Image 1 (spheres, rainbow, N blue to C red):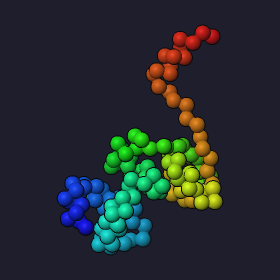
Image 2 (spheres, one colour; image 1 turned 45 degrees about the vertical axis):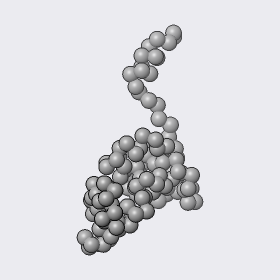
Image 3 (cartoon, rainbow, N blue to C red; image 1 turned 135 degrees about the vertical axis):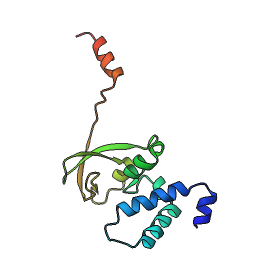
Image 4 (cartoon, rainbow, N blue to C red; image 1 turned 90 degrees about the horizontal axis):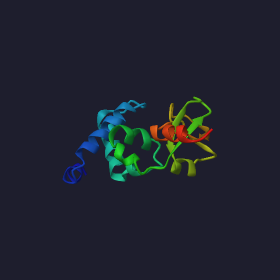
Length: 131
């Protein structure tokens, strides 16, 4: 599998998955098990699946261009009460109305939050509006 990944020019992506899995190794799996899991993730191309629980944070860190076309939604989970982003696909497939909290990862109820953009263009537009 690794030789196919190298031939496809995706060794850096595999290395990113290995690093990601190593940093999120809560079960203290051996380095060999971490590598095996990274290979499984790569083979399944989970990094391209917006339903993957780590889609937003993984791609924000290693492949920001992958988020350009993503349908990101800001949510506030019941556990942390801190705004964070998930994908619309995660919301659409929410089990029992729950998603993984973008802050702590705990599954729980959430609410969507609308974001007001504070861009320079909007500020200029607002200054031009008559009062």
